Image (cartoon, rainbow over all chains, first blue to last red; front, side):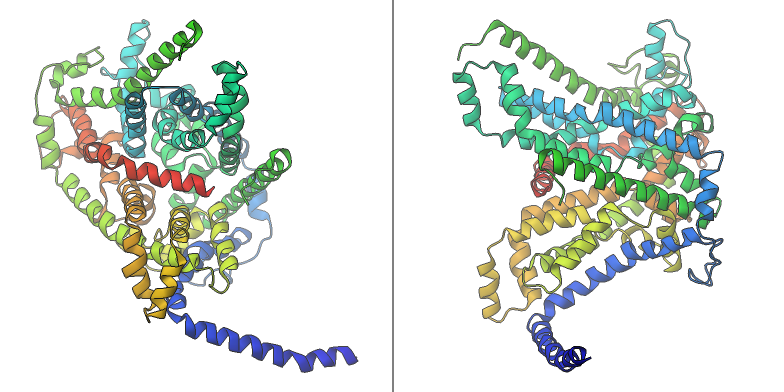
Amino acid sequence: MAQPQRQLVQRPEIQQGKMSFLKKELIRNKYVYIMLIPVVLYYLIFAYGPMYGLLMAFQKTYSPIKGILSGEWVGLDNFKMFFNSYYFERLISNTLILSLYSILLGFPAPIILALLLHEVRKKWFKRTVQTVSYLPHFISVVVVVGMLKTFSSLDGGLFNVVRGLFDLQPIMFLAEKDMFRPMYILSNIWQGAGWSSIIFLAALSGVDPQLYEAAKIDGAGRWKQLLHITLPGIMPTIVIMFILRMGAIMNADFQKILLMQTAPTYETSDVISTFIYRTGILEGNYTYSTAIGLFNGIINFSLLLLANALSKKVNQTSLW
Amino acid sequence: MKRSTGERVFDAVNIIFLIFVIAVSLYPMLYILNSSVSDPDRLIRSQSFMLLPEGFQLKAYQYVFQNPKIYTGYMNTLFYVVAGTALNLLMTSLAAYTLSRKDLLGRKFLMKLITFTMFFGGGMIPTFLLVNNLGLVNTPWAMIVPTAINTFYFLIMKTSFEALPMEMIESAKMDGATDFTILFRIVLPLSKSILAVMLLYYAVDHWNDFVTPLLYLRDQSLYPIQIILRDILIGSSTESMGAGVDTGYAIGENIKYATIIISTLPIMLVYPFIQKYFVQGALIGAVKQ
């Protein structure tokens, strides 16, 4: 009993020391802390506020008047309902397939573009390709999907003109369930590959030129240089971008899919986020859709942690 | 430097491929431009790749300009872009300045709290209910307040502030300058290029924002251009274009193409001149990682 008492005696002193230091610091830099207030408030309200709202996932219904804590707690019922729902498998597999194809085809595209651009000797040509290939990035999703829609028009739309070359009947591309994935992924590459290549180009310009000189003296051709100098040189960047991509694996592009999907394509196009939008915003089933969102968020975050841990182990590159 | 035959072949193939990349990037826009000015009847029956317009008319553009919805949408978007970006710049500067100060108490903890929000969040529904409970739904505030700070952009700005010489700030303090003076008179004027980057990034985000108005706005009179575009381009209702104007079916397709051009042209024209800043931003972001 002696020890805790001694601590009790000491504590006020320490606290007083801390307090006066805190006070001094707050007075000395008061304007910094005043500036910090709106920032902290913003994050508390608009980032952590919704996280508090996640508690709804464990409740039966949400009442806007009574607030979150007054609802009836139902444990994991909402999650169970989702796991047992008719849509569960379809949503998970659609989301994953779309993401995996996007990674498989979409992730290497900017790297390849950057590597090819890196091999160009004429500066003006390189710059022209860059400027032009960045352009589609600035077109809004709405317009990109609008383009897809007009291109699929049965009355002389571009895609059907191409089909005509092969003597195929015109089809409504956006209403074909087998066309959804290719259209989504290819248009993503069209829009994003150029812009995403910037980061890899920056990494490429950071590779030590002396390494290339040394390799040339050793008689390494350009292919060998690519394999043994260039690729290892930009590997950390590739790994980091890959980890970040993994953390978004369950986040298919909500805006774009919502704009692209039509009822006949739900079989391939309906993903978790569009389902959340329909059940939550349109049908008002708040607690159920919040549970689905939380489930999704946890998987994403775990995958990010997993990818990060793996990469830390394998090649010492990590996000933090 | 002598090059081997293999290298020459590679270089040639590479250049041809990259020319193909240019063509693919530009062709959709060319196709749309040419379609928009083509003769409506020929456009609908045409089986061409539209390397040149089929016939010529500018009536479709006339309809687009006369459409009151497009006008209101443009004006609303302009307001959201200006007001939203202004708030973004203010808030992001405050965050970047305070959190780049190494002597800030609780800096590490705050940074952890903030970075965490990049990887995990409440999601669509709790955010919607929050914005709703705050009374922001169906007000212009919903378009600018919930997105006041983009954490990724904040990190870019913070990195750039951290590179500024600390002694300058210290000596300004010795001279009795408050932190507000330091931020607005010293730090920001020295960071013009990063400010330009932030301005462009935020402005483009507001311009292209489609989800925020979809979730938070109900009133047609508040709709930004992207929602109007969705109705015209994807809602497949050419009659929604009409709004009292007798358009007829034939020109409907032209109107869609013209709408795409009208809504994309501003950024396309300005972009080559400001590309430098965008790329700079992307690079600072990459270095950060």
